[in-house]
Image (cartoon, rainbow, N blue to C red; front, top):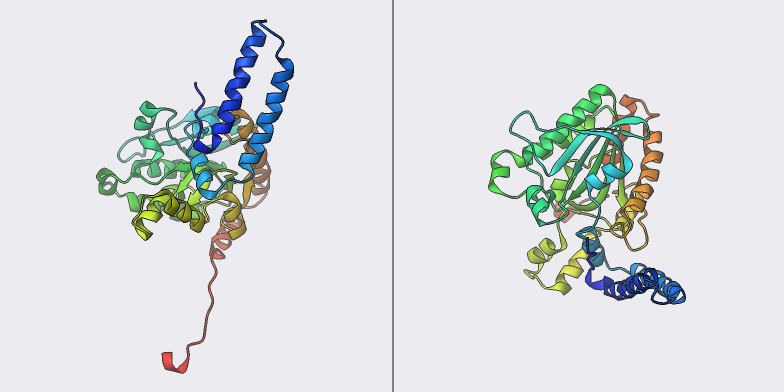
Length: 328
């Protein structure tokens, strides 16, 4: 598959194309290009470091949406063994935007739930671009309750721009499905380990993202609204400057959310982003999952729920100010 480049990645495209050309010439024994190849590899590494050390929030939004970025099924393939996908919500039908099933993580049985975008236009249409309908959230909830019954940890992977906005979703109870998931996850007596791997958009993301630990990949995003949606509401604009300003104001990047206490750890990505080395990205993620899962499995179920409650209770800050006589 041909590699796709974002606008700010264009300097890398030129170097990589030249590098590929030299490597082909070397393989065909046309000439000795090893010295030039080494020079270009070093230049590629330096240019990548230069670009990715100074990304703006909106550039990170673009990375989170990169068409080649690994999705839930990619991480299932790289990280888990014996994955058995389960289908349906036992009410309406199956939702291909949500993947759910049983698997093993390094020998430990777990339940995996994640939103799935497509790798191309055809699959995106099939997967509804990762935007779940109510049956997707009900399927996720069914698997979470099964995990509780079997005393298995739940690992969720968040990657959606939001819940599906069509009329059918509203007719089938979209808001209630998400709200019920939040209620169930808040009291689920088994560990819940959440990872935001791409876009974490609004309630559509939150419907599978309430957990004991919330991890976030380095170039993922997590926000109540997209920068484009925010700019259209605040400034009635679709222009890039306003969209970039909205991305800065929303504090939607991993380091910002870690500082605010919304997430628990930033998962590093390979140089240039997860889309450049998906398997290495999976290895980096597996290492962090292992650490947190090991810690969570030592906590008793009743303690787990109380700790989870306290975790979300302390989010946000408020001040009480005594009213002046004129205000009473």
